[in-house]
Image: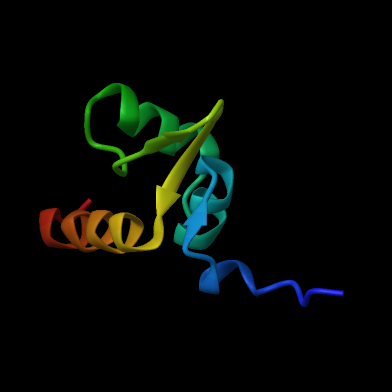
Length: 67
């Protein structure tokens, strides 16, 4: 049986998981995405995922912008 990795160690997460990790609400992340300010996402089949490096870069850009 495979061990389940902690959420922060996953290479890719859903937008909901990204919200949990960032401490922001899911609705705020969707609002930012609608404004073109959300994290970079990729499609994997029908799923929308956020890669760890994209999430970290996005959070750094928010910090720099003072959001």
